[in-house]
Image (tube, rainbow, N blue to C red):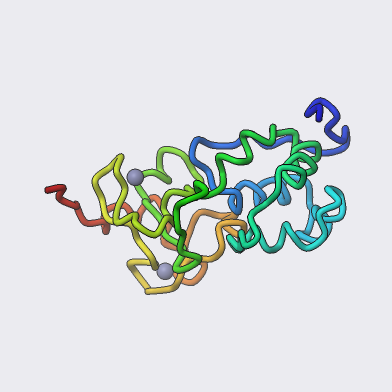
Length: 170
Ligand SMILES: [Zn+2]
Ligand SMILES: [Zn+2]
């Protein structure tokens, strides 16, 4: 299916390296003022968008669904697949986790942070945060990360980096 067929009235959003589908869908919806239901309708995907934003990938998105989404968001289905957990790898729906050091460099939620076996950020050798280190609030679903700060105490994600602990690899 040709990605060039994107609906001309929609703004495109460029994916970040490693970005999770939930975060990408949230950004696309904000740029286009769409609800999960509205985007689901535009792509002919019904309630799937709302499920995917919650990382509910059971059953996993089919190739046909990803291609339908691709025509609406203007990002190829193969690229969308990279926003999903790898097929054989278990993932944690919650808590939503964050490497604030990564976020400072590239403001997005990464899918690798939700993988079950992930203990920390390989890139920075830092532990992942699973709540705001200042007030203890859980992070919202990445689709709702509009401002890049804690919704309760407003500590920015960038400022949270100093609370991450170094991890040691044996
Ligand atoms: Zn990192
Ligand atoms: Zn907070």
